[in-house]
Every structure is written in structure tokens, then in C-alpha cells.
Length: 146
Image (tube, rainbow, N blue to C red; front, side, top):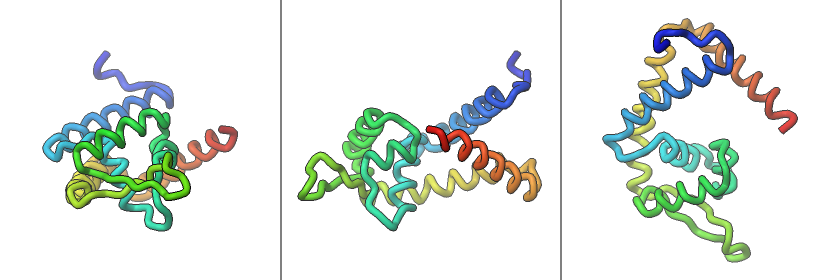
């Protein structure tokens, strides 16, 4: 059963995601990061047009606000991120990377890029473009009624 290829879209997508995430997690271990921590660092570094709060992270990572609260708490404890609260809303946490968080993100970004290149190496550039287009189209369709 281990070598069986999933025959329908959901199992094939899930199998691909699980393997990709597992390989990425192993590659991040030396940095002391998890894939979710990398994702948080990625978003706080790549979105420059507005401050990122926990609510934004929950949406960007497609997860529950409670999961983000715990993740942010652990990341602050590990000095990867810090937060401030606006004077008019002390409950809101605006997330910023620390110097350590930025340093680890730069290393992790290189790991992610290498893994992406390896994962897509069996596809032509046209196939990669088409796959990306299809995944975005499916996501947009599924999100329009959400």
C-alpha cells in the first residue's frame, strides 16, 4: 500500500502536502523552526504594506485564532517575534520579527526555495505555471462561498 498512488484529487493533494511538509520540517530542525513558525516569519517579512496582527495570521495560515495565539506565544518565548498593541486596542497584537527571527527566516527561506526547486524539478516550466494556475483557480472557487 505504501507505493500506491492516490487515484483521486483530494488524496493525491493531501499525500503531496504531507510529504512536502514532512521534508520541510526535517530541513528546518537545525534552525529550531517548524513549518508554521516559518510561515509566520514569512508573512511578517513579506507583507510590508500594513502591520500584521494575529487575526491576519490566522487567515493567512488558514487556521484557528486559538492556534495562532499559542504559536505566537511560543515564538515570542523563543525570541523569534515580538508584538506591540495599539493604544486604542490593547487586545490587538501587531507582530514584528526580532533580529533572531529575521536571521532564521533568511536561512529558512533558502531552504524553502531549494525544496521547491527540487519538488518541481520533474515538471517543465509550462507544467509548473499550469499547476499553479489550476491550484489558484480551485482555491478561488472554493473560497468564493466561504
